[in-house]
Length: 345
Ligand code: HEM
Image 1 (tube, protein in one colour):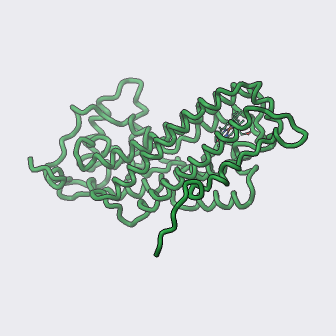
Image 2 (image 1 turned 135 degrees about the vertical axis):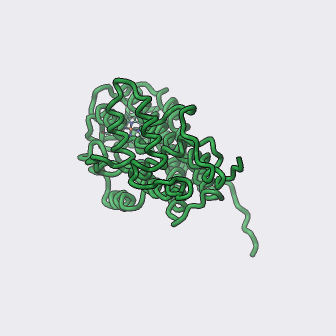
Image 3 (image 1 turned 90 degrees about the vertical axis):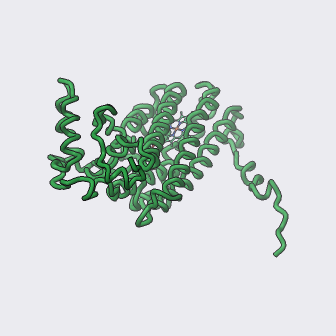
């Protein structure tokens, strides 16, 4: 079949895209506001990047949904690679705030009232990204207005994503399947879990290293890794998954643990970048509208501050740092295990 020549402008649908900036201030009866074009283009650029992020996260979710992710072949590498791209996009999104901040509060006031009641709350793509990664409705700050401004079709899309397995849930399943801790040959005692050859030894070393003010950490250890007295139904990572995650963090020096470690790192970095974006957004909001309420009906900067604090999606991974010990005190791993990992010592 003959290949039709591709044209730059048609391929990129430039006609549509470049005709998609329609400032309210240029409409009949209004006064032209110079900075409104910038305001529109910035938001459009964000939404395009959100679309790319969703594409990457969807592909990652597809691979992670396979009954068995191949840790030693391309699967895990592809997951990490694509999530790193998401991180890089978020870094650009954080920096993009600089451009909008060249607009002053007075420049914004030239057209702000014309935008009401439109608001960032109506960015359904942003909410879908949060949901795909793992932010559940129950954990949202400001639930009263989380979908109040959206059209039914958009609410349905978000609800449907919330009913799917999120990256966080898929991570939990993948961590739970990690075989190293249930290897009979390596560990003479596997159960009960606090008697497991590795965990009982590790727990003791960890306790001995705690300072006076850290005694609560001992209880937290048993709750997080053994599920003891765990009435916190809000947790997303199971004790088994947390044990694997900590084990990977501790032994990432082994090449087999390197990619799993990078997967956890890249997820924590996504949280980090999203947090940075929220922080920059809040500062920008304060600078532009001070303590005025948002066009979306929220308290404005106050709401955003709450969302920033509450919406860290992979915080249960980050919190595991409290349970690390220094390298020189790490229990040596059984030879049978390291040999299986390719070490003939
Ligand atoms: C002059 C600049 C901006 C101001 C004053 C501003 C203000 C606000 C305010 C007050 C809210 C809280 C919701 C409300 O009541 O309206 C909000 C939410 C939001 N804004 Fe902005 N914003 C600005 C720029 C941007 C940009 C460039 C983006 C890029 C996409 C953005 C995306 C969002 C999103 C996604 C939310 C929802 C956040 C959440 O639900 O946690 N905003 N914005």
